[in-house]
Length: 195
Image (cartoon, rainbow, N blue to C red; front, side, top):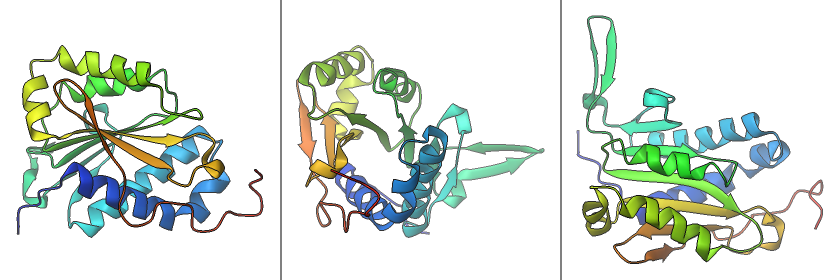
């Protein structure tokens, strides 16, 4: 099996495409935290399938880990994953995303992706705070060099946004902004969503 190397740009592109493709299932559960998070895990499952990766949810208390099938092992009635391709977290509550960011710093993966939300516009102070958390990690220099720590933020007032998702890659002294290429807006707003 070929080795999958997923960049931050690959992930945000695939994330946005799968998300928009599933919008008819996602929008009806927008305000239901558990159901919405399940849909986010389904978006991640699409990414896993498209890349021929295995997926496990709640492994090491993460929302999802994508891995090469040969890196999943069952021995003596035990299951473990080595060399994860992507470690994924989704957080509905912007105040709790710091926990998800810190959790990533405990794990080792090719790519770390955390999805959260912002109100009306991206708050630079909020991003600075997340940056300061990562900067304290002994992995900070490696993460900055590899460009493999990705924060994806979506707008809570999504129906007003033409570019719903924004990505940010951790760098030593700043965030490098990414936007998904390809689909950049909601395909067709359902009639039940009012602006």
